[in-house]
Each structure stands twice: as structure tokens, then as C-alpha cells.
Length: 261
Image (cartoon, rainbow, N blue to C red; front, side, top):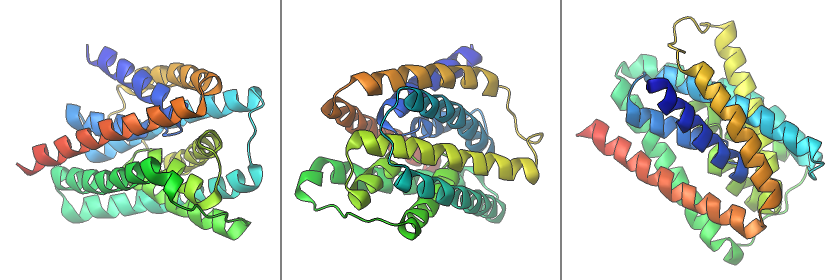
């Protein structure tokens, strides 16, 4: 039964993640916190594996469909996210070792995620009134990529809505273009995180029993979400994006309350 639950969780999270550019981890991580079957670091690894599988499929499908990708922005973002992913993983390990209490780390992650989600939601609802930047150049894109990679790896969410909103605001691109850039950034951030784990502690200490079924769910969700993204209108993608933010915000608040009380 547990394998079916995690399989369905992965399909739902990655379908939405691929459609909106959120990556799926922003749903996977909080829901795994709710289920409470694994510790913080294991949840982070399983979430990263799931998100990596989805991002790989989604980016490949977008390229095959000849979706317009602004590579001058996307590639530096991706490279920066690799460095950020390593920093974020090290930061998570440091906090876990320092606090020694799984529930406190979960609360910290969910508080940070809730604040970021709320800021992004308010921005997306009011972005027509906010003048976006039109930043260009490799250095800027690299720095933004580092920041997104840190958020992605430390929070175990794959980047999520933070990527899309920040890319729209800083580079003044459409939601669909930001979605593709976000997925590329997410892909490289997860590669760096998983490579860091492989080259340091290894994966043996983590309970990855549900990882195979979540990978299958993520691949399925990646195909479905990418297909929907190609067919849906800009407004549909944006509405889905905003709805999921509210859903995730509710889940994070639940996680905070449950671990504090």
C-alpha cells in the first residue's frame, strides 16, 4: 500500500511540477513530511531523485517539441544552480548535525518555504502592477542560478515557484519561457546535489525503498505535464501555478503546527 501511495504522490507532484515549472519537489517534500515515514535527509534525497527524473523527461520533451528556449539565460542559470546545489546540500548537513533534532529542521525548512511561497504568490497575483527588470549577461544569470540552486537543495523542493517568479521578474520573460528555464535549472541543481551525495556519504545510509516507484511516477508525470504545458494557454499555466502555491502553503503551515505542538 505504501508503494502505491508514493507512486501516486510522485505522479501528481511531477505532473503539476512539469506543467507549471515548479519541479514537483515543492509538493513532494512537504507531503513526505506529512506522511512522516522518513527522516529529513532521506526525504531530501528521495525528493531530489524524483524531481531529477521528472526534469530530465520534461526538458527532453520540451527540446524534442522545439520549444523556444533562451539558452543565453538558461545555461548560466543551470551552471550557477550546480554550485548552489552543492552549497545547499552542505548547509542542510550542517544544520542537521548542529541541531540533532529532525522535527526542528523540518520546521525550519517549512517556515522558509512558507515565507517564500507567500512572497511568490503575492508577486504573481500583482505582477502586472510591478515593473520587472530586463537583466542580461552571464554574471547576473550565474548569481541567480546559485541562489536558486541553494534554495532547491536546502529545501529539497527542486526550486519550485521561486524559480519561475524570480526568472519572470528579473528577466521579463513569459510564464511559459520561465517554466522551461526553471526546469533546466532544476535539472542541473539536482544533478549537483545527487553527485555531491554520491561522492561524499554515498546513498547506502538512506532508506530509498520507495525511490523506484517514485521514479516511475515522476517519469509518467513528466510526460503528462510537459504535454499539458505545450497545449495549455499562458493563463491556464499561470492559474495552475497560483493554485498549487496555495496548496503548498497550506501543507507547510500544517507541517509547522504539527511539529511545534
